[in-house]
Image (cartoon, rainbow, N blue to C red):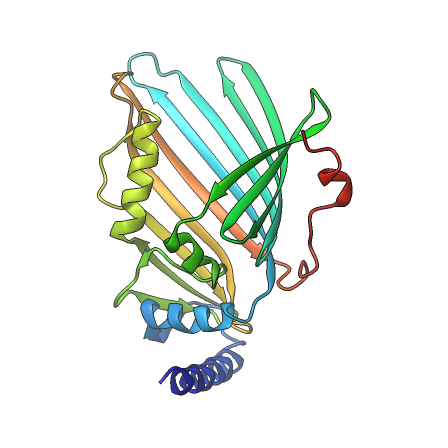
Length: 258
């Protein structure tokens, strides 16, 4: 059955490619002849053949206090190079309020082996790489089998549009992903008024691999800060597929663990 499914998805990919070539000249977006849940199946079949990718994440958060009108903005940028076992991540964050701005950055490497994820974070004060070890759950290990797949999206029956170069759809986080998101936000003192967050996905029509994913988070409130509302948008851009297959943790990093 699995082999049959593989052949079917391979055929579907070929049909998609033919469709994209026929519509290349189109500038305006038109409806695609399939829905988002079907597109995700095809994308994930393609993603199963991906060995590495670069993910650049940009997140912007805006908080407003209703009585004073004071606005606080925060921006997070993550540049991650990943293969199936190893990742190198550089994170930077800035915050601005009332004319005051602060910024911070962090670099880390991580590797998965024998069910353990080992992360090494650079400490600029000591010049050492601080280690952190975490045993992965069965669910996390299962996810690692196809780490570049599109998951956590409720897309049944959602329409897809195309301009000949990309496929695009807007769905929402599924219940499980939303529960994880809600738990994380609640632990940070943030309440959610919306039942789910919209997710916009853009897929390259030629490769059938994701180009970008944007999560829109609105209706955020802080119970400990009455009158404060917040919204955020996180954009993930995917590029440079299969260019980091040989990524490993550098020897000089391992030599400076402490």
